[in-house]
Image (cartoon, rainbow, N blue to C red; front, side, top):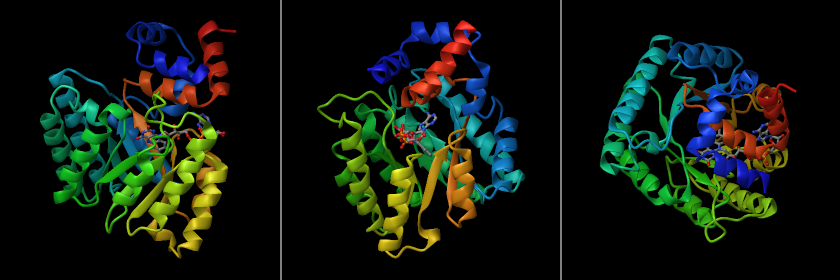
Length: 305
Ligand code: FDA
């Protein structure tokens, strides 16, 4: 119930203006977001890389209907990739992009062209791109674009969400040689017709998807903080006889950082998803929806109590 309310608020412009102009807990934004500038992003990347972690950087923004904004987002990714290259960080760091920030909702072909430019720049810099997944209304158009990007850039990553009923089949389809698939539970408010609603069903689907990906020929990227699913991922990696360089774990910046370091110290590849930029509202609300304890922390910031 609380999750649904917060996720509805995540797309409400009135609430967004209120939250953004309230002196809300800056600590909470700082906990989940690396800063606002390219320099902030590169600095955080360097710190994580020094700890033996891999990184995927996300320039915050989504759902734009404005061509200039989409162009600005693409330009920022190009600037970021060039800065990562100059700092010799492209072995450790890749980028994650949201197609709705690149124009998917009003100009799908333009979004593809923008994403292709980012993939070209990433390849020139010696790294890769993963295309984030958004709500179910754009699943097909997002996967279509990922498939087109993979023609020239076969390592372009796709994201699949275990809460969607379709995802086990998608995992099988996307587990061919060379594919990179990030598996997550899914962060949006979705109707029962397309998505499992009970946590247990989402988790069971996640396990079936791990099996499909680990049994395939691609590179599974298990994005979760859930200790049980991480254990199952480790178990399946053994079961399917995978060496540690053939899969990775992924977690969000600011969530379970000690576990990130522990897994890395145990010899596993661990990638931290690092968001930066001014457009933190939707991202922060999804993080609040995932954990009621964060809401308490947030409300304390809003009310000053
Ligand atoms: P779950 O929510 O059950 O959490 C398990 C445990 O992790 C909790 O008990 C708690 O200890 C900790 N935890 C989880 N969330 C927390 C939080 N916000 N604050 C503090 N602790 C928390 N989604 C999507 O729809 N499209 C996408 O492209 C992506 N991309 C993505 C990349 C990466 C690297 C990650 C890790 C996640 C995503 N997600 C995503 C988000 C994902 O779908 C999901 O909403 C979150 O990862 C939370 O789910 P968990 O699997 O962590 O389990």
